Amino acid sequence: MRETDSLRRFLFEEAPLRGHWVKLEDAWSQARAHQDHPPAVASLLGQALAASTLLAACLKFRGTLTLQVRSQGDVPLLIVQCTHDRQLRGVAQVREGAVITDDAGLAELAGRGTLVVTLDNHDGGEPWQGIVPLAGASFLAADDWRAGGLLLQKLPQTQSAGEGARGRMLEIWDECSLLLDTLGGRELLDTEPQLLLHRLFSAHDVRLFDADAVRFSCRCSQARVNSLLLSLGEDEVKEILDEQGSVAITCEFCNRQYRYDAIDAAQVFADAPAPDLPGSVN
Ligand SMILES: [Zn+2]
Image (cartoon, rainbow, N blue to C red):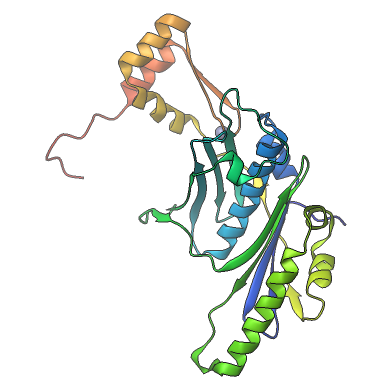
């Protein structure tokens, strides 16, 4: 059976190297269903979704990993998120009037931009922000239907492993990173994981673990949108109501629309907790 919307971990039996493989199909088509992007931007978004899944798979956390690109280029903003239980969503913005060629890559689309990875712990821990120190080799690809990726990583070696084992690990690492460079986008997207790993690393004993499901899911909710409305402030909301009769807020990740008429909006402001008084406890 063709395997899609799944994440697989694999290990090299003879060296402390591991990897992850991911392929998205339904998750990818749902994430992009309402986003009409030029092919190069769609491909970048698909690759970013695959990358966020691979990154999240490498880290121990309970929460949301966010990968965000901001730039002055044709793609001023791209955000993708993956939770610890592999729920994905993502959005890309394209500068109005941008002329984007089909083969434009990250450097052309978001040149001189910044890439930031954030981990928000759902358990209430401090959010962590930075560049994930990812000593790995990766390959990503996406087309109109599928997005996928493969990531290889060195694992820390025990002190007792000795120089010989370390040299052997680096040898295998160099060989496998080079093999990964020979992979084509179509080959990654078309090939089942067992066969792909066999083709790439046939000289090595690679153990492939069971699949974990990956899916598209948006965490937007009435409560979150209410707080967005509150952050606009009562005056601004009143102004929009006077002009347009209602306030519409659309979630960019899933295209769900939240609409407030004057009564709904008044209710939200009436229900809002009073701002903390200076000196109040908690
Ligand atoms: Zn949403």
